[in-house]
Image (cartoon, rainbow, N blue to C red; front, side):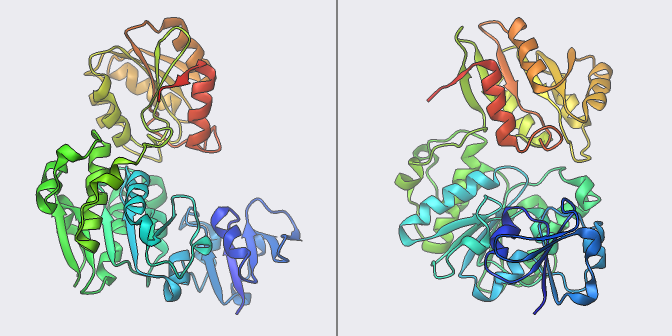
Length: 402
């Protein structure tokens, strides 16, 4: 079979190590080979009549010429469907990574593996493992048409990735699409407000409204869960997975989980001033959830980047209720400044993160907080949200609080 891979990031490189293929990427010029002997070609060289199967990197937009010309598209999930063990797929707008990590921790003793959007490609997961727990993006779901999980957990979804999907409705429908294929012995756990949009289905559906409702549904004692919102909901969903699949509530295992970097990560500089790294807030909802933690302080908020076409008005309506100053960076800076002026919110146009941190450092008082919660993706100026958060702390010369 003549297999074509579109893109050459982590996912496709893992596949290329396992299968003979030709790889097409916009970054390639001319033709060369990789370390496995696979041909590397520029995207314009793709010939759909010389390919029997095309596997795209999930992030490639549906409008890309490689996608529109392909005749045999197959997602990474669909490619591994025949050998995939029972699986839990976790999706949503915010909290996917934390929920996936927590869930894997609860099933780790039996050999469960976590992967997918969490950073480990399916090609690097052991198909003999008893359970795969996969953080699953809307991009992957868009391209997946046959693979199904035993349990699908959907966190709340809000306006995100509109520029990729074309509309919020398309984004929402991608998140819900897998439910139509799930078997009668499978379960989907999702926000109640999404139930009216669920396609025809035969699996069990469980709707939840909030953390309190989740705890009631699954008999969870929240006093034994040592996490505050927004991580409380992630923890409750992980426990719900254990309850659904194993009829267990392993509180002790969950208690050993530590919140990862770049998620409301607190640090202090040499003067004892508070700097909070929330670089993983790559959309509006994540920033809106971070702000209430500091409602009693003046907030010096760094915001901006690639907002992915989201409607920013709800964000600014909320920002106007806080005592804060905005420090704008990134590709949507002009848009942010215009909205700040419209809502009469103090702001400083900084363009770069380094300038924003330096400006805040001149103004930050001991009882205030410097918060990086950009409400935007990072790739316009950084290689990842991780690099953005790391640089934020470096520029601030701040030490993480344990």
